[in-house]
Image (cartoon, rainbow, N blue to C red; front, top):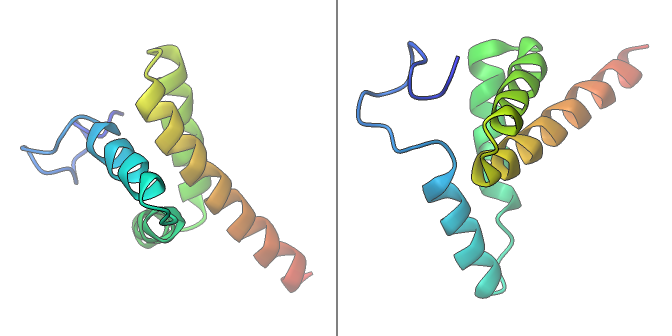
Length: 95
């Protein structure tokens, strides 16, 4: 499943990663941290997929690697790390 063909993606959605990576680069050049935007995106994934969001992010990252898409790799690697840390911390707290 690619972001463009996902049933929840708008039909006019931009190509995966391109716009977001440019925003992150611009924020970094201005001395701003793009991490809060990534956390908002990760939260949206949690709302849609729950704990399965980690597997979804991993699947998307694998697809970006397979397609040799550096922008997508950047985006989905960051999202995967945020989600993985979120749920691994939650699991440690509950146990």
